[in-house]
Image 1 (spheres, rainbow, N blue to C red):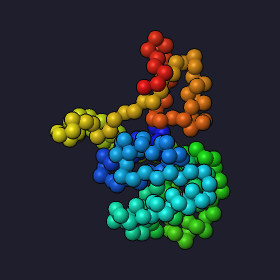
Image 2: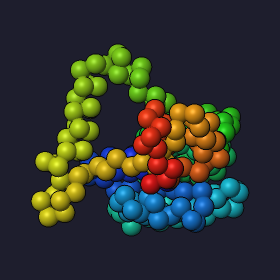
Image 3: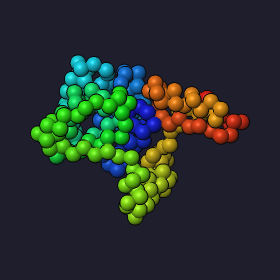
Image 4: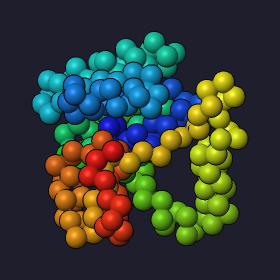
Length: 204
């Protein structure tokens, strides 16, 4: 949850009133989800043992937030072994797992695990849904715009509900650097390719 999509998902969830438990691959990344409002952040690592520890940490955190059967929704940008080792166990019966990425690669999913838990698994690229539901899409976009506007912010904080976050800006001639950042999971927010070479900032 330390990349552009994950951080945006946290902010959007918090703006909508949700409690958020975030996962990151390394301890060095834990401060990033916290900076955008995550209620708890845990490291899932890259081994079966760390996945098991992550699963238990999420279970206890969900209980502390009043969700004794598990979380309502998992937004998965990792997949790989983490999906079966931990994520299916953290969602409550009849809950939902939304797949939006495969940072750890794609692995086969045993449907029996989903059947027993009665979990909904949905893919989300938004584009096709928006095409088939234009009215609802416009409503969603307007709600996001409202979150971005100062009028929806707290009078005391003076901050927007959602803050757009740019980690790096690279010039068009170095566009391959942006893909390398993505490939090596080094993003800490959105990486932007700038067509105006005179205004490129290597890192914000």
